[in-house]
Image (cartoon, rainbow, N blue to C red):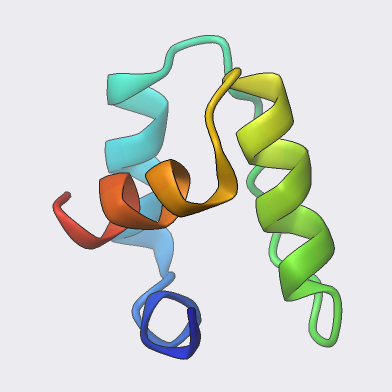
Length: 60
């Protein structure tokens, strides 16, 4: 997961918004120290497993 967090930037956010239009800016807001919580919330909202979300982000 550390690699995903290191590469999580505005470009990644925009790609996620294109791939998953239901995501909002608030959903994608990066909070320092709360990375895992954010990823778990996104996985839940997208009805994906945590691992599937990580794989999706890594392949954007």
